Length: 318
Image (cartoon, rainbow, N blue to C red; front, side, top):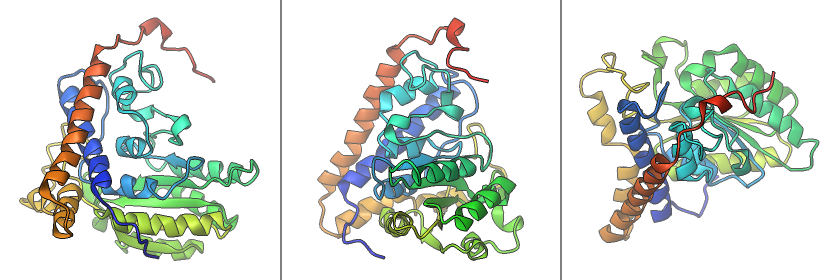
């Protein structure tokens, strides 16, 4: 299925918003203003932007621990997201969730998950609930290539297929399962082939193309809303940074990251737009708008007071 809608400067801004947010988060983390484990999606921005463009407000998105981009693509505001990671009282969750656990259900974003593949069964639950609450909800769950080897992901896909649930499983394949090439961990590195074993359609798409991702997700959403069950999308992409902040990346061959920069989605879309007739000034303005927006949001978050330590156990349930 190919859409007549093509990516433009709005998508360029959306991807740069994520890129600039992640770059500022890296700076704040290295400066020890953001504490704890942080995983960045620099280089993978086209996947959440393309996917979320195909969704409706009632739909539910569940991310992996590399999920800041999914939150922003879903419309979660910048300043409260910065504030959450910074442990500020104005954060989305009062500064309690930080990077690993923040959530914004009002925007259809049901959080990151520090358990590898842990969001898959949660998405299946949201899809099952949508069958009974009249919402016509579709659930989208994103996870990395390494998560496809987790038992919970297999169980989630089997359950979704068995009950024809409206779930879209999105594998963000950046070719590395943490620090190990995924090709060294599986018999068949084309992970989309696994979908057939569950009785669902599987597709591999160019994850650095907003258009390719949006078209694939749109087709999967249409199928899911029609009651035809789940789909598996393998979106091929590349990390431009380490698995985590501080990763020395000694496992990556010399020149690999430099080569990846030549294919990264923001520069690629900018070149495509100019080739199609958009002027350089419009593209530069679209990018600068995102840079300025992120800078202002970060400053607003940094000006907010830290969350009081005595309230850390509020809103916890056991």
